[in-house]
Length: 283
Image 1 (cartoon, rainbow, N blue to C red):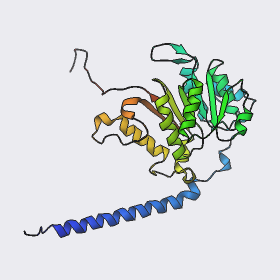
Image 2 (image 1 turned 30 degrees about the vertical axis):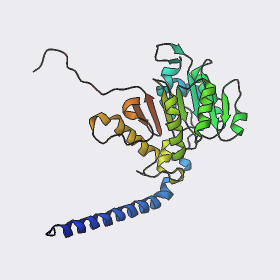
Image 3 (image 1 turned 45 degrees about the horizontal axis):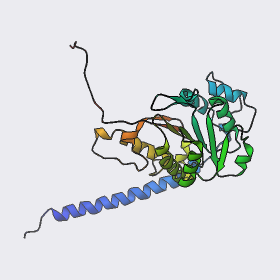
Image 4 (image 1 turned 90 degrees about the horizontal axis):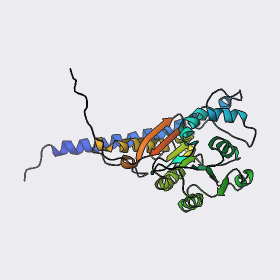
């Protein structure tokens, strides 16, 4: 059999591609290393203790708060109001019945946010928090909310808390901000959310910081996982299949809202998209 005269050329091109790929990986690692001192820097100039400005309900509640310590980025407040406003009067299930909201906050810290959520969501809401620090349970009055101690990276613990709550409608992940922990929490709690439920994750800017398993465009970071979910939402329009191992975004995600450092994923059953035309006038 005659040798293919093009084979040496193809082999050389293949070797060259492997060399370029290796150089690209090394360059990417070097860029991460160079950015650590910048990406992980916390600058005191970010603090602003001036009066709250805003007319939304959540900002007004924060402005009046004199209870336990709360540590939040100021721009979160109107975002919370936008996302959680529809749930202030309860949660409407698939049958159309409205009932008290079941709300779970991952990350309690000093307990101030649990007090804010009680004021915002009203006396009938079922509010639970989880934290890995036992002191967080001592900081919260049981008449305000219930706090359970455990890890957000422990699926069995998460499921046990949700069972105690009688189910969960909305989750707010303000926990460790470590990518692996965020992934476990979302994978575990998403199947437990009802139709119309929502999973929020805040402080997702940590996905760009190496100490939280992050980095700009680093595979596996929370931001990169969300980008894959966006692709999967549109899987009916491309032949790349479902790339995310987090959840089935093509069939179960109604919307992904992305704000500065907050991502909200809304649960909704979806089938293949259908088109139609109506009206009888055209040019």
